[in-house]
Image (cartoon, rainbow, N blue to C red):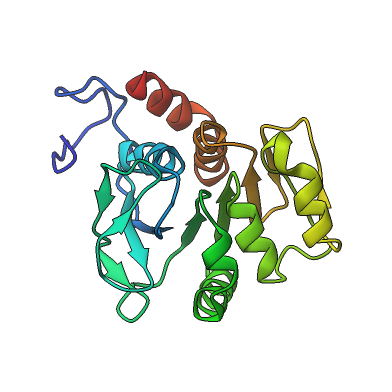
Length: 207
């Protein structure tokens, strides 16, 4: 029903969700790479896709299939760094982040796009990548409980907090683990639309 238009308020005759007023689509870019945690990607993607007010796409350094954390699942990115549309919301998932932290091309591109974006969300160990850009210096972030001390060690200018599902600094947000990326994404919907109605509708739809 995403392409369905109704000229009056009410519920969608296809999925039952509350109809929402048409608004300008916002670009949501999910950065992916070899070893990316699949749930980090799919959780956030599902929330924004279900909200029906966003253009959601994947982007990688090169437009070649990448291997996710599940060896039998590959994702072909929709865009590369060279042709990616400007994101309004940039999402940096976690996973096997070591090679990304050592890749200056990745760090430079993410820093530039993060600065241009309206909102930036790191999911799980994606916080290590975002911290590497320097954009979290002086701000708070969170990550998986087992990675708290390591992130504090490698990012001493960042206030790494524990015991939080997600942390909201305003522009920069982070979630502790793969599933909490869904919580943080729903929180972003609440911020964008000014109330919890859309987030609750999306959560019910996903359930």
